[in-house]
Image 1 (tube, one colour):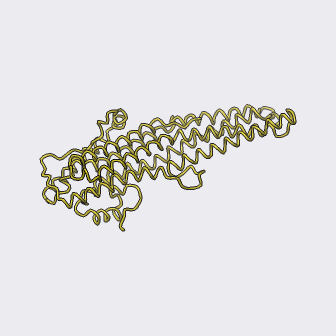
Image 2: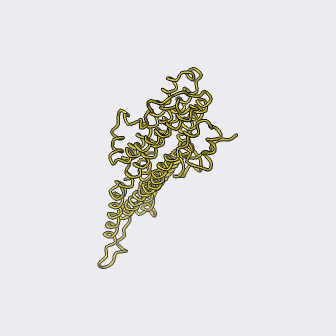
Image 3: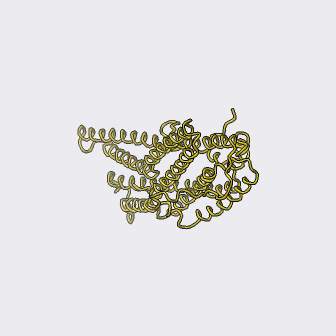
Length: 374
């Protein structure tokens, strides 16, 4: 069976060698409107920038945590162990350790609070917003003009293609405005949802066969694709200790590592206490166990900071809600009771676009506030 490859951006036909031939073979009567070369080119720039800057932002977050982790470990070691024998004339090891710890913690604050690289986060989110809004604009235009898209009239199709190009130029200009991201953040009533417009004064004489192909295309490329992406983020694979992969993989990895570090903390602290009780204050290794327990506690805090910095719990919840919403709307869209009702079909498509915009807005809001700090 000929199926679309499970990868990102197949919904807009970004791959000329795979996606576009698939569209033409499966939806030949409407494929002209499913593939939009000018929109794909406009999409690829912010998409590539968003992917690149996302990695930079996450690396800076991990650096912040590592700097803070090291600084706290150095500070803890200084208070637990006696380093005076390492000191020499003119060089107090305790003072050096204090300075090193302070420097590491200050650097961690600058990385974690976005003071040094906050611009990368803002540019990442602006580009991600532009890319997703172009994707939404693509499907909004099809939804708002579905009857004209499904016509067999050459003149109507040419008129519609010209109109969509003008709308694309207008949309790109809007998305590139400096204050657009903030307008989305402030859009509590979702008034910014629809970028596309219905083309007025155009004949809407939909061909039955073409309209059926369009409905199948929208089912696969809009409902199933969006639901599939959300479910992909909820899938768990790998060893269970990985901090890579899907959102669910990373959340599970953090939780498992937190459990291990907490168990280690309790075990080491218990050993330190037992050694002190049994062998008195000068018990061998009691300080070492106490220090190791402190390090384990710091690691637990660092993992919690990583989890909060990436907004893993919020992202998991958002994707669960989004997947459920897409699934519900897809069932409504395919229900026999509404397939003959143009108004009912349009209503489901409209709600799908509102849901997609809401999800994007929630993502931008959450990650605009992300910080990596212990």
